[in-house]
Image (cartoon, rainbow, N blue to C red; front, top):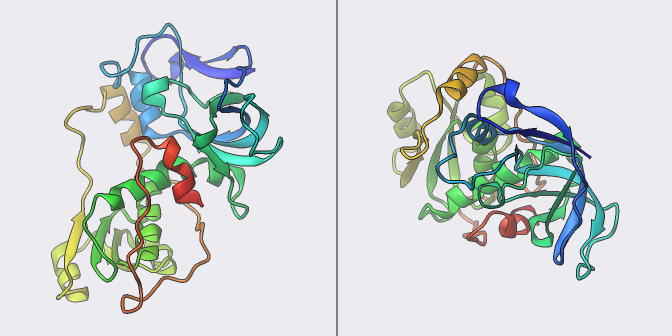
Length: 278
């Protein structure tokens, strides 16, 4: 099979397309033929060496965290999926270094769920990391239905899912984004805030008595971006980011009738995939 790999850190030029053996699914695993896979900022950081201090040393690395594909084969003790079944899933890359940028990937059965029928492969492949990141961030906030949440970057890859999941939990969401994203935020039940105007004034005007939490992303103190990644992200900042597509048809609950909805948490992303996508 084909796999995108690298054997030393650097820019995009270090990537190469290799022919490698197709993995055999171990007990408890499924082998998925990958049809689409996402490229995340974490892939750029890993390729540039930003995770070198926290991952195992290898001669060759393969990137990729999440994927869309079809079940090709299963381990001997997996009997609850059918061959050819469309699935989405992800790997615990920092622990296993099991990259998805390849024709096939073998993962634990618990790391895949049935793919949403209303998403095309490209959109479905970007779902696991972004949606699970959003869900776990919401799990950390002591909010109940009826509370107000401010999300900065509410039309972004993670922010868009956080907006939709928060509304589904009965939260009133104030979404900070550019004017071009006002319709996107409103269509998902959020209240648009213009990122170019004073944020505090807008929050007070739209929710003066609300118990508000403000989610503001901050750079990691532990894993600074390598210079090559910083340059890439700066150069790409003018390129529109693909937005998450709506994955639920449920109407947003009102603050007066909604009850708290708590998603199950997990110590690892793959084992919680079915919780978010069920």
